[in-house]
Length: 264
Image (cartoon, rainbow, N blue to C red; front, side, top):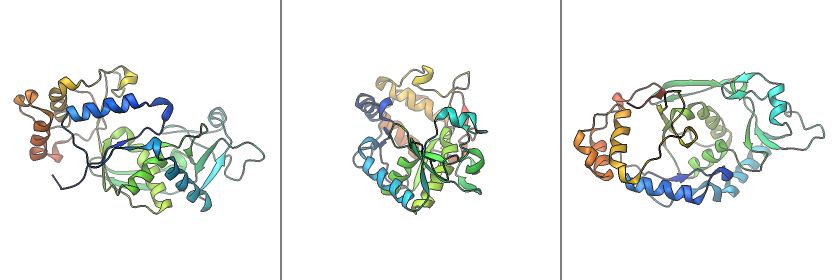
């Protein structure tokens, strides 16, 4: 529609919860839906050297430090923030002889703001809402926040469209972008489909998986969820045909701004 490139990345940095079988199934569903990505699929689990290099840059610049605190210690000594306990900065001045467990990045006291193309202006005070956050975990895996910032920069990502469940993560990513000298992409956070209990639809909430044989109806339902009005005949069309229709008729001003929605 705008002559851009669509890149596919498997964000499998949390390796204990991911598998090649799951990744292959995602690819099959995308192909059945008519999606065609540009270039090779990038797997985060194969890019640890890049994340380690970014971590070392942050450490050398004094932006990151080792942390010896356990989750229980943090919970017992901190206030509650938007995603759980706010790290109180216990190890900011040193470990005092304790063994390091994770690596954290320092945050500032001022707000981090950005203009979301659907949700509008969004601001967050990282110090008050999150605290110094983990970029390499105690189990030696890199955190999602660092991995996506490194990958977005290397792939020259300019526009990001994703679920509103990641809206609260964006200020942390912008903070890392600034520390590493990377450009900040344009963001658009779509409403997330939830069940009657307000839980995001997914395997953890036992939502039905997408079936390759029912790609057409699934795409039509997704378009309606996003405020579009696909014709009934498209239910029987191929994924590629539905996407072609959407590229020609999609109305950005029709998209709902509410961050959580139940499917019709």
